[in-house]
Amino acid sequence: IEPYLTASGDVPPWMLAPDGRTLADLDGFCEMLASMVEWAKRREGLRFRLFGPANETDIGSPEGPHIAPEAFVRMLEILDEQLAQRGLDDIRLVVAEQALFNADYVREIVRNERLVRRVGVFGMHSYGTVPPETSQEVVQLVKASPYAGCRLWLTEYGDLEQTGEREWFVAWQMTRRLFAQLRAGFNGALAWDAYDNYHDHNEAWTIYGLLRTGLWAYTPKKRYYASKQVYRYVLPGFERVEVSTPAAHLEVLAFASPDRTQFTLVGMNDSRRHYYLNVTLDGFPEALLRGKVAYYRTSAHEDCYRIGHIPMRGGNWPFTGIDVRVPPASIFTLTTVREG
Image 1: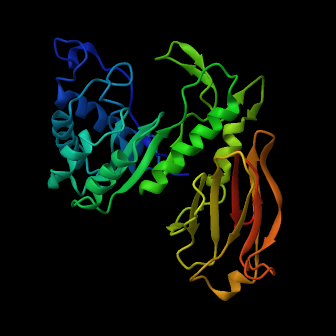
Image 2: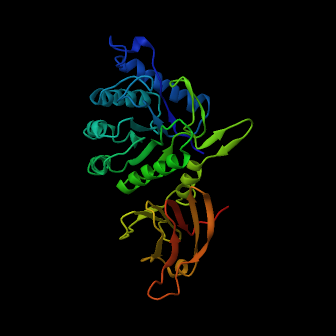
């Protein structure tokens, strides 16, 4: 893999303003970051191009020092200079890694055309409900700016429930948050966290992970299988394609390879009733339409279970598409992507 390197956590007190939380020494901070990146690439030999210089600066310690939007842009300018001086022109920054999902930092960054060549990704975090209009504002700010070529990622998303007693609820909420931002126009996401572990800034053992940590073994949780419904079958390079459904409680997203030789539809049945779907594809090659899709499902009692294979064309006129039954409260995937 090519890792995505990030920096987070508190900084030495001498870098801070008298309030003890706001970053004041921007030059020293950027020198520290640039030297770390240089060391990672040239001494450690890590192959990477993306670097997140600061984490959740909108809320500050212990995630990182507080940096206001205007100062954040100035910090990026200094870091750009520091990286250039070290010959690290291939490094692209991931910004602004906000804890609070709003347009405050994005709005300031897109006003600065100097940083266009340095910024590679706009990253946001989501652990709660984000109003659709807020997501759209962030997307539109980027797409209507000189930064339109940058990607939009959920660089953290998940749920902060810590009892361990509501795993299916957490899996459902995480998937709903992922769906919401993919629908808004984001094109990548990183689930937080990989596995249960001790967090220094929480000073506690945390259970945010997709995997449960045990003695010599890691066990997939329900949230792992819910995530797999999307991550395993929406391959890198896939594009979102238009899809519509008249059912109010049925959320669906569709993806395809650029040449339309592979197809994946993911959905959530957020109701108490069964839905009988008939999915018709337009604009796909005949060879694909003669094949079948695999049907996978995660629910309170299923873990990304393969229900079976269904023809792309059904025989029941006029319902001649992919014919499938979706039970209540389930996450489902119809895909031509093969396992293995």
